Image 1 (cartoon, rainbow over the protein chains, first blue to last red):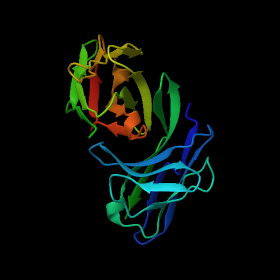
Image 2 (cartoon, rainbow over the protein chains, first blue to last red; image 1 turned 90 degrees about the vertical axis):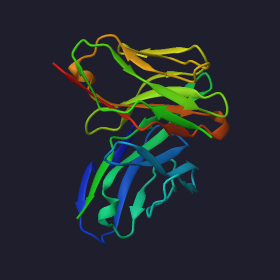
Image 3 (spheres, rainbow over the protein chains, first blue to last red; image 1 turned 180 degrees about the horizontal axis):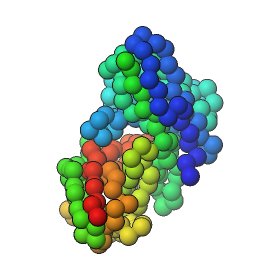
Image 4 (tube, chains in turn cyan, green; image 1 turned 135 degrees about the vertical axis):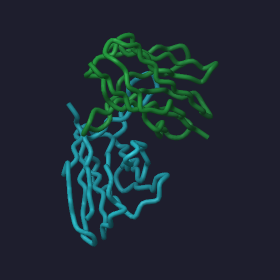
Length: 115
Length: 113
């Protein structure tokens, strides 16, 4: 069972609306990530955070913004949604797996459709 | 730089067939290697991992061996089931790059009865 929660699971909104995708984790992980997953399934890192008040842009340019005011919370905001933002958004946090290795825990994702 | 190259799909197999999904990597350091699985409508779940050369990760009948000499981490299962239908992602994490993950493009597997 996932300890990282994303809401909503599905969202259909009109062009120009402001939206916030929520992501929360209860594991106390410092590192958190947002990925955009295109219909071809490939994952693109759009934002990450190494802790409170730390946010960085990822490999794929995105018009979204993120904030990290609390360790457990890493919301993603689109100020003005467009059809090109239609995608699956996955939130993840990084956990120590032992033997010097880190792994990701993913949320179930938010499927956003902008009409 | 770091990258992961994964066998392109989609892959369709009959139940009880043998599965191989190829994965090769490029890394600047000594990465940890992973296979993640994504079932329809869900996020990714860790399937197995290997943290050093010659390690074998295994879970739910799936196996993958970390081969440094061929920079590979191929996923195998001897007898697939319909419930294995999912998308499989190969990934690496390199401590030299802050343990950021690098994912392959994903391989869709469909198992038919």
